[in-house]
Length: 354
Image (cartoon, rainbow, N blue to C red; front, side):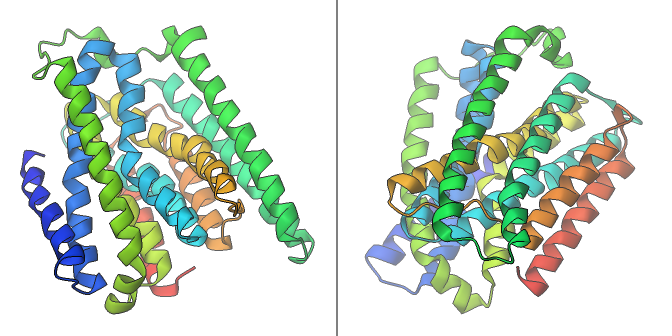
């Protein structure tokens, strides 16, 4: 992952290309994307170091939260720019990207080393339960509008979306109380029972400073990405579905992808699942609702309405992954199925759009 740090050079290049040389959006977009990738890795390293001081429970929560910061900021600036469809596409893409691609790569790589991979079923069950609720919640406004032939006013949809978002954030908080306080004993990761010979390489102060500095730079690069995304999509002939559902989620979650795969190769699939499936759960019932609430403060509420194909993609990806995890152990073939399923969805969005 350290090789990614060389891509930090793309950050000043992107800034100079946009603000000094006034190059076209396509060039700036490419360098901005390349610059965000190592920033995600820096955030991952910083939170990993901090976790040595705050403990694995809080550290895991912090890792999942900070892992979503690049995409959170990108979506925040996109909402300010009125790009609501891009935001929902990006968040939907993150959910089934994490649950299919990241989980698939982890299980495949780990399964090539170990015949079977075991994991904490309590973690998996809780994450999938919350994901199932998220599917239920986002399906309600879609099908009620469909039942009325689309003749539902935007005001009604927006008001319902805001109420739904608040409810989902409350449920997310309850989920944290459940897993971190009242039932924390059933969420002990197998790896926590093993003696960890490694220690922190950074001081706590350095970890916090690096995390905050990286977040600030991510904010700048995220705003630049949003400013240039439409021009770049037109220049390269990419549809909004591909940019939102495939490109942005992959760029914002590179560090999480690498960490999940490394943990699986070490035989710690429970941690990989916590990173991949847990991140999908957090996006579904916290990040997306948070964006709805944020949009209300901008004066233009983002309706909680996915397109039919985005909603179908969420149902299929979560349903498939849940079925494959029913037997309480994983093998490389199940990982390959996850990956192929993601590639089919990605190809569909690239060729057909939304």
